[in-house]
Amino acid sequence: VISSVSLLNHSIKDEGAAKLAQLIKGTEGVGVEVLNLHGNDIGSSGCAAICEALKGNEIVKDLRISENPIGRNGGYALAEMMEINGSLQRLDCGSCDLTTDNVIAIMSVMRKNELIEKLSIFNIRNFSRQEDLSKHATRMLEFNNTLVELNFDRNGVGDDGAILFSWTLEHKNNTLRHLSLSGNKIGVVGAESLASLLIRHSNLISLNLANNRICDDGAKAFGSALASNKSLRSLNLRNNSLKDSGLVSVALGMQENSTLSELKLWGNEFGQDSCNEFLALVESRFDYFGVKVDFMPFMVKDGGYSIAEQQE
Image 1 (tube, rainbow, N blue to C red):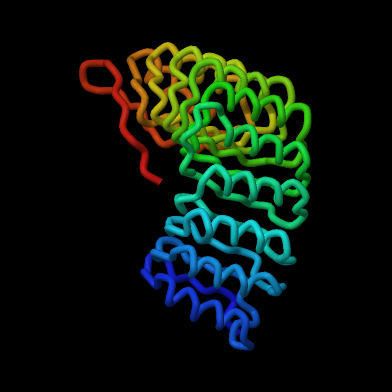
Image 2 (image 1 turned 180 degrees about the horizontal axis):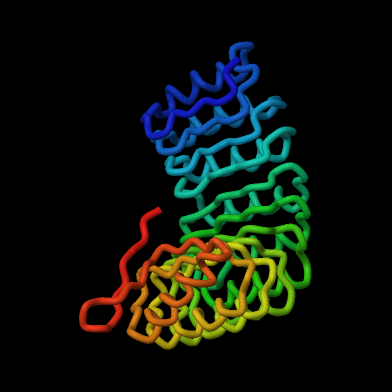
């Protein structure tokens, strides 16, 4: 029995998707729980065929259709399928040329969905400057009690959107554990709001803010959060225009933290002070508590410090 079908980057296009849909409908498809169609040049008709096959399917739990140009019609087909399907627990549909209307439809279904635990919906074709995508995502989180992981990368989330996520997670949602907002437009104010969430009340286990622009003041807020938060296990602040003072604040926060197990800071501007602070941490607390980092400070011949990327 085949339990997983992975056609990652095989360019099967609409014709291949239609044949795969027939397989899912037929007896040959019985037992397939994972369907990975990432990067296959599947358009709206191919997506519609897959979704039609999944409407009555009670086996497939994991559908990954990201990096396919399914477009607006494909997005509506996904939403319609989600409303009927009784088995799907993970859906990846990022970089699919979806529109704001598609997000509205998918988030509306997600409000009452009690099965999907992981949703990845990033890089939406959004031309609004009013944080519409953030509004619909956070509104969904107010009602949804099942979703554990949300990837909302590259969706134009700014400070107002970050504030919406912070408020919703503090007051309306107790189930989300993993939040990724990488590649957005979150600045100091949004970072301070998310950091305050970690201080006051948070069930988050991982927070990814890589490739934003939180700068030193945002980093200082996270330094304070790390000193008191006991739930977060992973924090990603890569490429955020952090300089020495902000990085030192994060290091000082980590001196008080014994629960974080992964910290990513590469792509920021480490100076002598931050290298010194983190070198001491790497050789002591990080080693003792098993904290994984993506950078490695070291001492150079002249007695100064430098930094290198730490490969996984």
